[in-house]
Image (cartoon, rainbow, N blue to C red; front, side, top):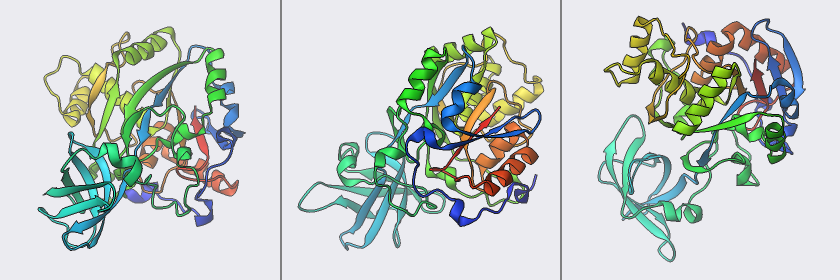
Length: 368
């Protein structure tokens, strides 16, 4: 597979800069995977496509104010810290902007006459990623000192930072929102519950590597970012019971997909001696990827670098709700694996022709 196979042209004015109000007023492109048929609907029409007993799986991660203006100590040179992932109480993986940021560089966040926390760069990683260690935990200061990070293609300031959070966001730790969930309102969730839809929750804290371009022309040579994925025993049981009843598992967003499929891989490989996710994948191919019918997924709390491209066999996800994704991205590859590359690109072309709004603050797709 070539990177160019996942390219398409998007006019810049199709990139959503602001969210629609209310949340469920966004448009919904419905793609029927079996036939390729498309429907043009509104997100509030979603309940028409769900059945009593289906389980909706939501990523409850919460975006933190991860962008921190900083200064080099003692020179005062400008710098910026973008927190990607907390490693322990004081150490973080971060993207650090500024000149000559190397091991030993001291950085200060805040002001001399107010809240101020200093940190030291203790490790250099790929490109401008660094491991930094704060002199004290930074989390208590984030609301005062940090800003909500937005993807680079959003250039309009967000009037209400809360619109870049799902209404069910709970577990702090993400540098980006699980944007497929931004369309849900409290009223819709209540209506779905009355309809007999069940809810399961997972947590996958998203790093900004989600938006990083794939540079390898052979997409199989790309190495995907690693993120923490959590699925509790109770939620795993709820999902397994739904599958046993013959109901569908509806993943809200690619992050929920990666969490669920990681948990399914773990279940299928249960009892094998390997722990590395890539090795587990190879083991499953040797085992003909058989699933245990009464335990499609197991509880999960580990890093995942599951990379889904066309040819991947989905083990638990039956339906996907997602936004429109960037060209040449791992997310476009994932939805192409689920619905077929040709069908996805045809659907995207139709969406462009019909004026849909793309990317994080844009409209949604329902892949049936």
